[in-house]
Length: 628
Image 1 (tube, rainbow, N blue to C red):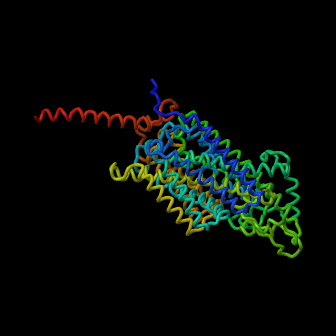
Image 2: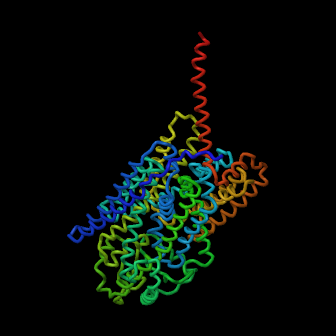
């Protein structure tokens, strides 16, 4: 007979609450648009648009604070599928996707779609291969799941240590994206912006852990969607007369091709690709948008696609959310929402790139050098665009128009000559998505350090309370990332690629075999993680497979293949065999009925402790009577 669930139901008023949040954001846009018409300075509009949502996120985080472990680590296992899907999509794409990936599509066109397609396929693979079974396992962290599956504390600590580099890289990349936006639109230096945003994300994570980050992140996702959708829809109406940019930007291809030809863009070959990979600094566009395999060959395209797909499917900050829904069915629906939203962004980014490229080339690249648009000075002061008639021919060519990769999205409203409030709105939306992703990565990193390292090493319950350890890990991780960003230079897109390569090579083989192959052993799991991590890390550190993104993707795929081979070989010939409890665990995990395995084990421990306390109370008077 199935035991009744002890989980609480989701708040039935969540839809109303976030409807109010959406209405507040729209009202803020309308009010600031009115103030702009009344003569408000751009600086005041930007400050209001960026800072007021930050206050909202903090208020929501404070209102959802908790000290209950299950709420802190799993949001009480009662997050509705739609809201869980919001956070999944924000975590997968992040501010890196909104700014850096869209900018890469602007520069590389078709070839950059390998990244977006990889995210989408990775979400699908995780939904089918991993998510339902991790939900049934119910572990609070990915290393904790591996520990329960293989009955190994060594494996738990190893997995936690190997999880640090990809999570730290993604966290640093997201914080840098958010800080770049803050430094552009607020009177803050980059260093001060980093400290401010890290403090905000840390406060939200400490207040209520997964619970606070879920509900604050849902508000951040709504702000992000509104911030991206409103300016893009307005530009789409101006250019195509239809408010569905994902379906209409293709109609602009002929005009874009004419503009590219007119400014001197010629087809390129993959052997020249090393000069085409966009970096952070403003640079010229070197490739036509529709030319396939100009910067990546067919094989390189496939490798980058698979690298992002495997990394997304095995990303710990995505998989840790497998346990926040109320049931396996709800978790599947959560993953479906996340997949839908990621796929929607994957077809939205090319629309942004096409609109921005067409407007830039028509308004600047084809204009006489003496009559450039008035807004060029504003964007040049922000270091987002540089244009000059270097060859003295009286016009601006493609090679003389330098654009910052991470600024392509932010310049779209300006080059379309839209009200400044839409530029500030777009900046607030991109920052919101970056903060939502940063919160997920920070919590995944810190929760694992607290649960999988500290609690394993120090088993004394009075040494440091459970949540205090998590708070300390959150603060220490955030401070470390802030210091790193202040003293080091980091390219967000390259950091994200390295993180996805590490995550895929390290965790995809062991997760797949741990769930689907009952004979997988602890030695096999260690061999799988070690082989994949070492190969990917060697490429990142020393470039043993060559330079460039395609070489890193190849290293990740080689590491994944060696991980599979090492796991199978060590499991079959390593001397030990999967124990009976391990096989029972796999069978239970693959049964969709019943409560999570971890929750049932916790209930048994609590029941035993309660029974022991009752016996102690009963034996106390009896011993006292006997002594008399």
